[in-house]
Figure 1 (cartoon, rainbow, N blue to C red):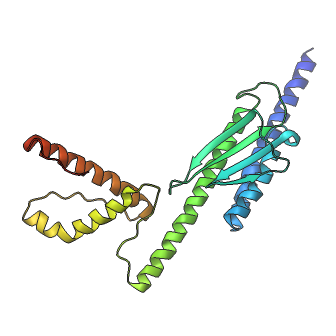
Figure 2: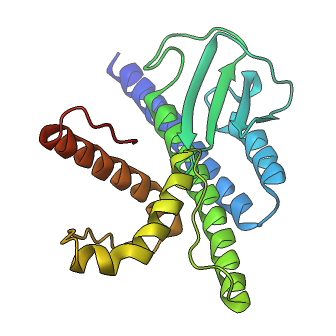
Figure 3: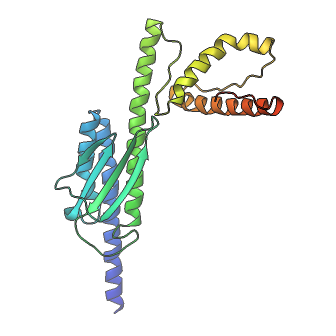
Length: 232
């Protein structure tokens, strides 16, 4: 009886180790695909093909990656009720999701028929993909900046992240640069310094900053001169 229990325990440990090795192989293979530097479409299509191999029942597993309005499907893909998924968002506001489906019902485990380790794996994969896309965007911005420096026609670069307030921010930033000396010396206006050299990040921070400043100004004017309206 004791030998039987020990044998089952050994089998369980071996099975767990095999699952962990499959997950590590998936991460390593995904990283290798990203390093090949192919187009985003080719990269996502290659990655989605290897995903089923890393779940418990590869022969009965399919996967889908959705990003920026496009779908990338593994072989024999079809959607079922047994799904594990994780969404991600890039710095420019584009959204994506990785979905893994079982084609038949299996026994209940940590998350429906899925293991908690598989949840960890899909979370890591979405993080890897979003970071990779962000790095591609950063390279494009750097390349644009270098060209702009050579052309000497661009004062500042802003990155579109889906928020239209960035256009309002561009105008305010230009106005502030023109008026800062007069406003501080004559109008005694205080200055807020934002120290950030990443176009992606200051394109997100500045709209929030300007919005808060305008809201505070509106409140002050409402307190001092009731009935006066200020556009925000």
